[in-house]
Structure formats: structure tokens, C-alpha cells
Picture 1 (cartoon, rainbow over the protein chains, first blue to last red):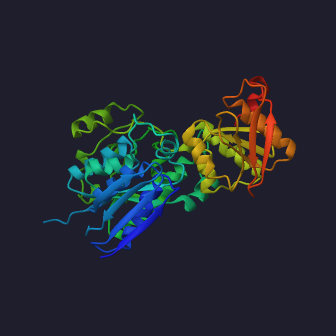
Picture 2 (picture 1 turned 135 degrees about the vertical axis):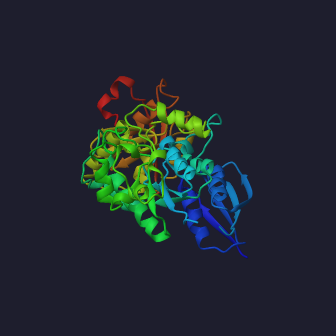
Picture 3 (picture 1 turned 120 degrees about the vertical axis):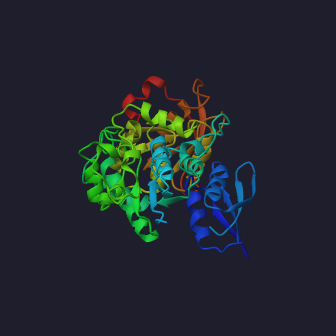
Length: 76
Length: 347
């Protein structure tokens, strides 16, 4: 199990989701990925994508300018 | 027990694709969704750029549809490949710069490739005969099936009863009698079906989902190509055409003027690529200059920028013009009178 980070700043929906999807394809079950985005929509979209594709959202948080979503990769 | 068949559904986020996918689930088909990102998709970008609007939930409707359906959704970035579709549409454009027929052929072909790679049996779409003037007509729907290569593996559940039987129907994977015979622009049958399935908060029916169908956006795109003398674009161009007020006072440059704080902030990200203007002694928009500009042009552009600032009624407004190398010039200008901004400058 390993932790990864994905910089999806200055991308707009759905690019942060696409980058997340592509990155998770490379990871193994149990790995975690923290995505950082400047698109506030990512705060909803990445968890939605994770839920429908069988992955677990561990944490979401936001600052004034950025949102952070941490996903645990699950078998799907 | 018979083998469960698999369909890949083109999910746009609208009502029709939601219903089409749901009708397949009703028939026991395993469905997964596919959604293509061309760069011109309406939802998301403008919403993300503009200042936070708490009254409107920010959601991606394709993801929302998939979640309602309980299916997986695969979002595919086709920005680069899509350029050829937009620039060289075999079947031409619709009312604006929308190459709808070529676009649908391209997407169904991509879905077919995906289906082959992932062991899926057929493709479904939410198309309805007569609903769209270019891509959803009785004479063009067979063209999509044929030119995409999907042929009879392309099923349109919502209007299937008005079309020849497809492979899934002929093989008995789906029951034709349980499909639908919708046609035309009347949305009532879809709304009734949505109610039957219990869908309430779906995306606005018949809402356009592509900027290329928008007259104003298309005009800006054509203007961009004319000004550059070449039909080409990058993703940043696509984004900037969605943002701000576009004013072209001269053939060799255009101004992109932020309309509110979110747009100003977004435009700031381009200050290393464009000359930028900002007001120094009063609140005002951030403005980008796309093109080349002499010192005279800079002053003229600054006057226009001042017109859209809160100092528009002042004798003078102080504006900082910043070149892409970081050099700045401070200009004290008289805001241009509204009447002097010619209507034809507005792109």
C-alpha cells in the first residue's frame, strides 16, 4: 500500500476527474491518492466518480483556493 | 442460465441517455457508461470559473446520471482527436459551428472501440428520431450506425420501434416490444418515462450540452480563426472563448475583459501569455490583450478597459499594462465613452 498525490490544479471539470481516473488505473487496491484541484466542482465530482466506480473517499477538505480529495483504491 | 449481455451507454448527462440506460437495466443488461470530453462541453467550466454561486449545486450531470443508475462511468478525454472532427467535418456544420453528425459518428466509433476492448456486446444512445435537426433524423441515424462501424450493434432504446431491428433485438438479448417508439421534439413521453422510473432532479431536458451549438461562442471561434489566419486551436483558446467580454477594436488584437471576480481571477492565470491590464485607482476588470499591440494600441485598449471599471465616469483612470516579460507601463487614460465603443467590436 502506498500513498500518491495528484496535482490537478488549473484544470476544470471534468479534467480533474479524468486525471484521477487515469491515475487510479495505475494503482493497486489499498493504495491512497490525494488529489488537489482549484476547481471547486472537483469536491463533488471526484467523490461521485469514486463512489460509482467502487472506490472509497477517505477525506475531502477545502481552503479558499483549493480542494483536496483523498481516495482509497478498492477492487472494482 | 443465459449469458448476461453487456452494453456501453453514451451518457451525456441529459435525460434521454439516462432513460435509455435505465431501460437496458430493466431488461437485465449489464450497462456501463461512457462520456466524452471534447473541451466544448458546457457544463463545468463556466460554473467553475465564475464566482461561487451557492444557489446552484456544482455537479457533473454525467456522473450524477451514472450514480442514479448505479453504473460505472468512464470519462474519456478526446480533446486532441476531436480537433479533426471540428475542423474537417465530412457532413458539415449545423446552424453554428456544431458538426453534430460527424461528432456523433466519432463518439459512437470511439464507444465501439471501447466496447471491443472491454468485451461489451453493443452500444446504446439516447437518440430520438426527429429530436435534433442534424444528427437525430430518420435519414441520418443510419449514417451514424454505418459510418461509425457500429452497424446493428448500435441500439437506440427510446426510438428503437421506429427503426429496423438491431442485433441485440434479433438475438433476443433485449425485447423489442419493451423498447420505445418516441419521435420528434415533444418531450412529454420522456418526462412520463422519467416519472415512471422515479427520476426527478434530472438535467434540463433538451438543453444544449455543447458550446459549438451556441451562436455567440461560434462567432468568437470564427473570429479567432480569422484573426490568426488559420483554423486551429488549443485548449486554452477553448477556455478563453468561454470567459469574459470579447472586444476587437482592430484586426490585430482583441481584448478579453473579465465580467466578475471569478473571471478576473481566472484571467490572471494567463498573464505570462498575454498583455494584461488592471485598474490601479478604482475597482475594475482584469483584461487580456490577445494579439500584438503598439504603444498607441495599449493606450486605446486601456481606455476601453477603463470604460468597464468603476471609474468609468471619472476624468481619468490609472491602468497598469503588463507585457508578458513582466515589464509594466502605467497609463493615465480617459475612459472611453460608451457610444465610442462600436457595436461591431463586440465579438
